[in-house]
Image 1 (cartoon, rainbow, N blue to C red):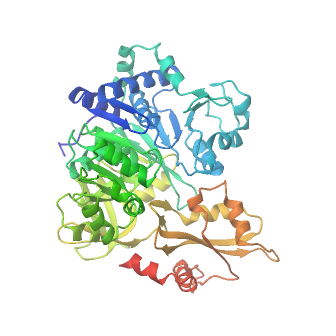
Image 2 (image 1 turned 120 degrees about the vertical axis):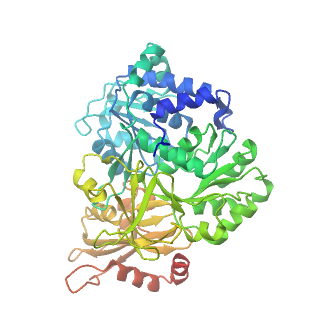
Image 3 (image 1 turned 90 degrees about the vertical axis):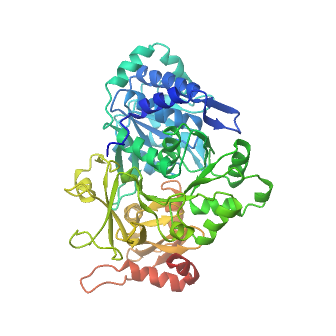
Amino acid sequence: MNDLLHFTVGDLLDDTTRRFPENDALVYPDRGLRLSYQEFNALCNRVAKGLYQLGIRKGDHVSIWATNVPEWVILQFATAKIGAVLVTVNTSYKSAELEYVLNQSDSTTLFLVQGFKDTDYVETTYRVVPELKETAPGSLQTEKLPNLKNVIFIGEAPPAGMMNFRDLEKLGEGMSDADLTAVGATLDEHDVINMQYTSGTTGFPKGVMLTHHNLVNNGFYIGECMKFTEKDRLCVPVPFFHCFGCVLAVLASVTHGATMVPVESFNPEAVLKAIEAEKCTAVHGVPTMFIAELDHPAFHKYDLSTLRTGIMAGSPCPIEVMKRVMRDMHASEITITYGQTESSPGITMTRTDDPIELRVATVGRAMPNVEVKIADIETGESLPPGKQGELCTRGYHVMKGYYKMPEETAKAIDAEGWLHTGDLAVMDENGYCKITGRIKQMIIRGGENIYPREIEEFLYSHPKIADVQVYGVPDRKYGEQVMAAIKLKEGAKCTEEEIKDFCRGRIANYKIPVYIKFVDEYPMTASGKIQKFKLREMAIKELHLEDAAAVETA
C-alpha cells in the first residue's frame, strides 16, 4: 500500500507542471487552443483565486452543467486548489433533475453553458429560479434554493442575473500567489472534492462523495494499466460529468503528464479528426461510440495509425467491435474497465497485454491496491472461483458515502469497508471477473445507468397513472431501452404520446420510456410481489426482440 499517491488534486497539477512544464496539457484543435502544463496550471490558479475572491471556501459546493468545454477542466482543478467540492450535473438533465441536484447538494454556485442538444440551460435555469432574471449577479436569494448565490455563464455575453466566467480571472487579481498557497496548505487529501449523482434505487439520485485521495489514485492506476507516459495523447469524447471523463481521462492524463484532447460533445467524425490532427495515442469511449466511429462513411479518410490504447467501458463490449478497434483503429492495446461512481470509479481492468478473449469475455482483474471478492448474496461469505455472487470491493477507491444519506451509505458499504456493487459476477482462478447480471434492477442504456425507481417516482406524479413498473428491454444499439407498464386510474384514458409528452423537458431524454404498455394487472408472486423479469420476458416476445436478447446473453 506504500505506493499510493498522497496529493490533493491541486498539488498533483503543481507536481506534474514541475516535471513536464512544456508538455501539452490541454488541446482543442477545433478551437485553436493549446495550453502547456505551465500555462494550464497558471490559468487554473487565476480562476481558483477568482473563486476564492467570490467568497467560495473549502467545503462549499459548486455545480457545473456543461459539455466538455475547456472551462470544465479548468474548474476541476481550480475548485480543488481552494477545497471547494465540484458537483457534476449530467448534460442531459432537465428542469426537475437540475432543481433536485442543486437543492440536495446545497450548491452555492452554478456554472453553465448556453445549452446542449434540445435543452436550453439558461431558460431551464430561469424556469427553476425565476428570480434570477431580476437579480444583480452574485446576489441571488431564492426560497426554493436557499444556498444558491451565484450563477456563472460560460460563453460570450452573460444572460440576465449571471456573471461571466472570464470575470473570475479579473476577480482573482486581488489575491497573491502566497495567499493561494496558504489556502492549499489547509487542505487534506481525504477531504471530499467531487460529488456525482447516481440515479437512486430509492427513487432519488444520491450524491456520491469522492475525495482527492480516491480520485488521484484511481486516475493514476488507470493510467498505469494503460502504460501511460508523458508521451501519450488521449482523445476524450466521453463526458467530463461522468467519472469516465473526469477521472479515467483527465486524472489518468494529469498523473502521467499526458496530453488531453477533448471533444466538446460526441460526434464520430470530430473524434476521428482530433485523433489524426493531434496524433493521439489513446481514445476512450463506450461501445456505441466506437461503433459510430468505425461505421462512419469517412472512417477510411483518417489516419489513426498513432493509436495504441484507450478504454472501452460503460456496457459489455461485443467481440467483433473489439477486434475492429484493435485492427482498423490500430488500438491494439485497448483495455476494458469496470467500476461505478461509488468506487471513483475503477475496480477491475484488463491489461494492455491480455489476450483478446479475456478483454471481451471479462472485465479484467482487480486494479493495483484494490481488493475484490465475490460474496454469497445471503451470507456475505467469500466464494471460490467459478461461483456466482455479488462483486464487492474494498480499498482507497471506495467513496466517503452518499451526501446527507447515512442509511443509504450503510447499505452500500458494510462494517468491514466492503462496497457492495449490486452486480453479480464470477471470478476465475486468475482473478479475472465476468459480470453475469444485476441484483439491483438497473438499466444500462448506452453507458448511462438508469434506475427504474427514479422514473417510476416521476411517473406517479401523472394525474392519470395509478401504478407503473419500469424495466429494461434488450436493444441491439444501446444494450437496453426503457419500458413502462402502466395501470391507469379507474375510467382514465391515455395514449403513449401523452405519457412521453409529460416526460419531455422534465426528465432526461434517455430516461423517457421508449416502449409503453397499458395493462390491467401485473404478473405477481404468491406473496404479492410484482415479477419484473416476467414483464421483460413478455416484452421480448411481443416486441420481437429475441435477436437483441440473444446478443445480450452471448
